[in-house]
Image (cartoon, rainbow, N blue to C red; front, side, top):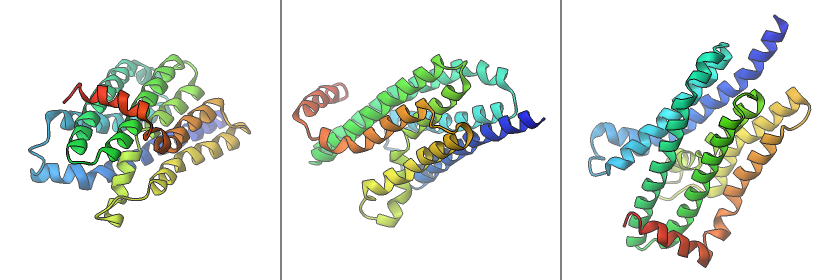
Length: 242
């Protein structure tokens, strides 16, 4: 009984981190997407945007559900839903790229090319990192410690956009400073580091590698998005939807 209680306590951490991710995502997009959607003011949005939103909201709920199944020791059911998770993640990456490209074409046409290249780099880095982390999580599905860290960190890669929207009312009509967004997202990484130290007396290798990737997406975004080679690559990508 004592060992079971310890296992449940450890799994509950990942459940509550999934809930925190959901708070960031639903909280951030309620004002800028969900509320306008209900009032009908987003009727001019392309269908791809709505599909993108549905996929990302579904992923958030899927992460909570999968974490809850493990917490309730329903591991077989958790594993049986793996194919659904793979399909969902694949669709998220595809529509994530489509929506990002569509939005940045509009930014360039509006004369805001600097922000388009910046967000284009960030979104590309984030989506590729998310895809790679989920792929490794699938490969590590029989190694619970690695699998659950990879899934959590993969989801953290997606949080910059919703967290930025969560803070937007405080900085309206502008945007929150990037460091405010990054620090808020990194709360989950810091919590994971403390969790590792408390339960393992060391920092898990996945936490270290995933943390480096997460921090790199935040730090490298600004200098690299201004590079000519990136502009050339992204111009080619933009032609796919222009």
